[in-house]
Length: 378
Image (cartoon, rainbow, N blue to C red):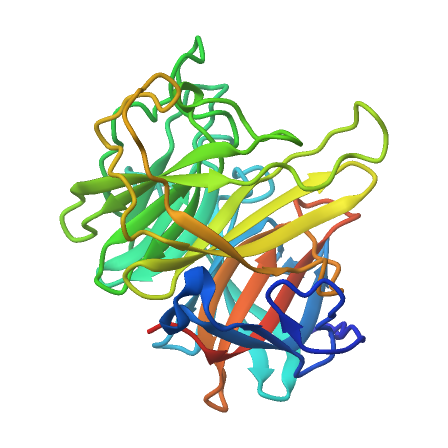
């Protein structure tokens, strides 16, 4: 177990306030009426940060690349998936004990890891998978792979047993498989980053950015159109697709020509229509930007029969989106935040946990943020 890093500053943050900072334990982030709908209000209070440095080992396996996290009510622990492409160790997820209560986030213990298996019951070979998100469903553990656009490996969503063994795979809709000429399909490393179960049981799967046929990636002046797939989780049947508008890159690189990006890295359902999303990116020699939004599926156009968003003249209504919080604007220093989950602390506190993917980079860290959930849509 490692020492926590708790940042200091002050105040209550209300949506639209630019001067507030929320890095004192107990500071409140309040969004009372998103979209003008006070029934969808969210109120959180900050519980702290905890960091695991790159290079930390668990049973001889390096801990890192944590790209998704979910709470397991049967154990009180969390499972967190690594996006290691079986290069440092076979593709896997970790069992975590997070020591958090209304008093704050005190620590994270890595208890164990479970190796994910392919359809033949074997660990995934090197660079045959890029696992990104993980959720506990009624019939197993649901997890996603971005595939590999360069190697023409399609993305997927699969269901695994607790021991990591293969159960089944959800059908991939038309237009998502990568193509050699890049005319359609996923862009490399910008595919199935996001999974969440809506309260009614449907599974929502989100793209990090746009498919080739749906238009360009984000820039400093323009956003991108990412697809959301809605599945009947029990049958695997696709029920709908929606457009999620990814915001433009919020921060330019420090020097002209420097690298910057922005995309949707995870989603988390609040009820059957309201969903939190993480949009995060990096600007070279500046740092990470992490924005938490809420979006609403109600009234959004089903685009499952529209092959190309860039070439259609059909009227399309995307999901509605509004900002909940900007972690940098709160005074935090977020790393590459890619996972989020609700959870229950041992003292009964409802919590919201974020985790960062350190990319196995010594200049980054496996970072956790915790917030107490004061109020949320149910």
